[in-house]
Every structure is written in C-alpha cells, then in structure tokens.
Length: 191
Image (cartoon, helix red, strand yellow):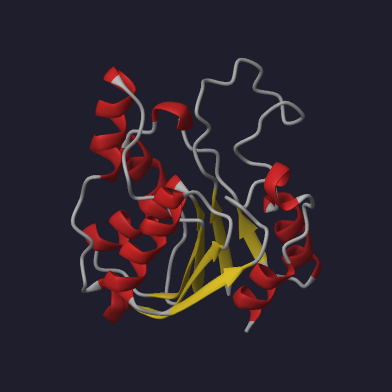
C-alpha cells in the first residue's frame, strides 16, 4: 500500500514558501505522514503549484506522474479532495481508497478569484469513479461552513461511501481542530 495526501488551497498567495511558514501542507498532514511511515507505509504529500491559484490542468500534469495503482490510498483536503475526484473521473485507474477531508465543490470569491475557482470546481462528478475505488470515506464536521457541508453532501450523493461527521473540527485546519493529530483519518487509511 502507498498513500498520497493532497493539500488544500490557501485563500491568498503565501509570500514565504519555507516549510515553517507555509500553511497549505501543514495541519494534520505531517502527523499522518509520520505515523504511516513509522509503520513502513510509503507516503507522498506533493506540493501542488500555486495552490492559491489552483489550475486543474497544471495540477493534473504533475499529479499524473505519481505512482498510483490498485494499492494506493488517495487522501485530499478541501480543494485537494475536489481535484482528486475530478482527476479520477478523467482517467480510468483503480485505487484502493479515496478519502475526502472537508471536500470543497462550491466556487467562492469575487472577480478573477471567482473565475479561477469556477474553472477548478465546476465539473460533473463522474459516477464511474465508484467502480474504480474499493472504498470511499468523506470527513466533514458539525461546525464546517455551510458551503463545506453542502460540498460534502454533493460528493456523498454522487459517490456514496461512508460519510463521517466529527464534532468541532471545522474545515480540518490546525486552527479549527486545535491539534495536528487526526487519528480518525489514520484509522480510515489503515482499515
């Protein structure tokens, strides 16, 4: 088994790109990665280009170079979840699991930002994905934003799978969760 964890998209461009100052690849990602690697599982958490201006075609080009097969677990946070669903719908590839954490599907912002978000989020979810994914889990939270709750429902209605609503995790960011630990996700990956 190998695991690929795809980060979400920060709202604004992050000027300082050092590991200590980036936000989009933090939260629970390093903790989960470390736990899995201690168990001998190969984990990749690629940094996607310009996540504050996410471009599906550019992300697709880089992501398609990763080693993904029937033993792969794909985990996506927020816009990373939306990307994974779209990507799986565009290709014919089987994977072991698809885990969506606070998935997002509703464009937001104004002007150019809104247009960019529309290009990223406005796509039909391919129902064939269900045939290529052995297990689907979607994490949401009781205190997630309304559009986040709607997004989780959109993905769940289209893909089915297990919908897990935890209490007090917001959008599954460090400031919402109050911890880097995410044992429920670790368990979902390993079960």
